[in-house]
Image 1 (tube, rainbow, N blue to C red):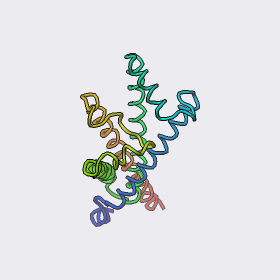
Image 2 (image 1 turned 45 degrees about the vertical axis):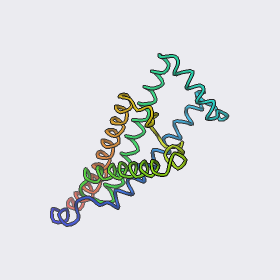
Image 3 (image 1 turned 180 degrees about the horizontal axis):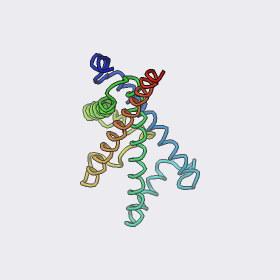
Image 4 (image 1 turned 120 degrees about the vertical axis):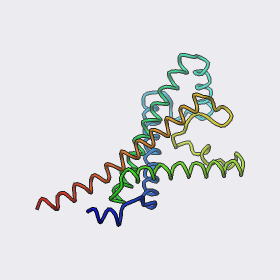
Length: 189
């Protein structure tokens, strides 16, 4: 197995890309489930439009206690969604690549960072009407933009990056672990 790891180990960027796709899709699905749950318990309705949601958020923001609770709850939900999504993405990359689960998890995270930078650069060059991320309401996003970036926003962004990285690494290890079980099973018989 050491010879196999030496020959076939390392980062497999294709596997990591499919892990990133899995993480992105999982984040989208989990965000939709959270939104549906919010609708089901009455936080929003199917008829709640974007304007009405903004008005309600603005009213909540004027009450410091409500704003802090909503902000903290939203941040925790975002971190959990990112963590779980990147566990799934890292798992896919780790399973596909077989070896180097930690490296595969990091590679999934690197794909996410590189794609986010490319999209942000294209949005900056093309203008706000072509800002793809701002127009995708289904993806989990930090509630900050370049005009309101504060210390709290920077900390939230760093926590989101750390949650995604930790999830991707753990997922990569879990995906690789499956292959270790298969390898051990071959020696038992």
